[in-house]
Image (tube, rainbow, N blue to C red; front, side, top):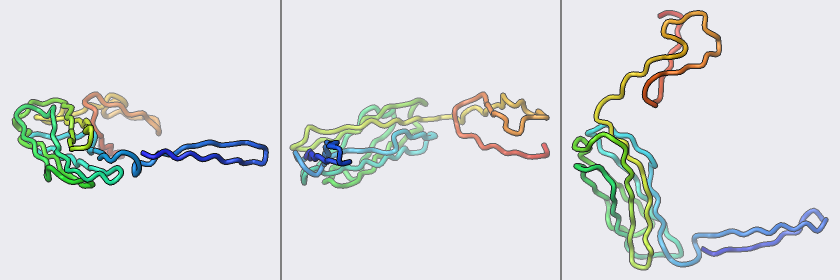
Length: 170
């Protein structure tokens, strides 16, 4: 990208500020690649869907071909569309997660095009094949009475989001 420098004198006391800015719009033509979400949790057999965004630097105008590695064995992979001309968006779908082993997978999404060194980004796919164990309250104990009005709540179980319901009756 282009780097622009500027100098500013301020405060009347001869103080100087020097700064630089870099703009992607300038420089060697190329493309950018960003994928989201960074981490995706799916319960098999649901599909995992990521959005792959391609950007343009300095009028880059070559077609980009997308590929991926690291997806779970037994799954299917598709990009729609692929290849594509940036700027643009492609949807990466990892299907047949029911054929995959439960676990966490780092998937590397890569883009290749003439006139570019190529780019890649890693995302994480967590595949669950069974419901997680139910959390158990640790503090305060289940059914406890005479608890502080500002208690700390702790659960034993998997790291998930918890819904807390407060009631005056059991």
